[in-house]
Image 1 (cartoon, rainbow, N blue to C red):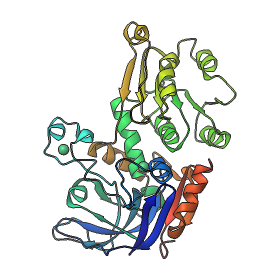
Image 2: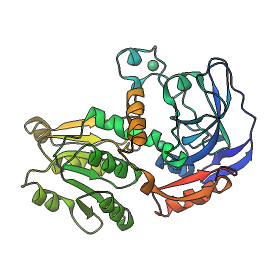
Image 3: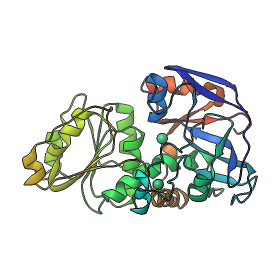
Length: 344
Ligand SMILES: [Zn+2]
Ligand SMILES: [Zn+2]
């Protein structure tokens, strides 16, 4: 089978890789569609501490079971949707019902969706692989992973019906939060960003107000729209320390801030203690997802509560992954589908 390896910053090689064999409880999946993600773009541009070269990459996918090991609950030919990690079920955090923080969830995740096939180990097959219904395309089903992250964040800080939600950043994650906030009955949704095409898309997907922060200061507009109080909930999706620091100014007394975008490691921020204490502002980080969030995200995709298809900006064949990444680097597109030959 062929697949991409990240070999150096800015470089991938598409080459023949060892063939995959399903052991007990494992499955090999023929990838029918993979999606690009901000993490892939970052890993390709400058390397990633958890992805040493050379490494397979790509982690959002859906496909068809090619082989199933003994005891695996799927059969060859079945269409499946999956995420690329699962908790161990036996560590302290798994026991404390914080499975997203599982001690081994990152070490045992699987990369390599930019390939013809991927091998899913037994612990993932047991918890985070599902059959894919026919009415959902493989590309849409591949949104299971990013949507699980977003759903997990919204389980920590629920989006409440009727409230004003401010989404800071309109990349793929900000736009998925927008779709989720609409589906969960948010009142006014405000989206800020820096790219007019993405802000226009946010408007089409149901944002009531979009603010281009390259030429407009978001604060006065947000205050105007909220009787001078600030948003009920702010969802930070940029991963920029200066944006993290600015979020308490945008939220009302008693409001909630979900810090979703991960900042570069080693960065620090500071917050006004008065606002956190006297104004009772909640700051909440969110990382990865739990199996419960994956199940909820799958349901949202399957029952049509969330239509992710407008976030697919185009398609590339498997050998052309770098062309998709170059487009994203140039600020074009939201997510690209990568489709192996014969799967078009
Ligand atoms: Zn992703
Ligand atoms: Zn664990």
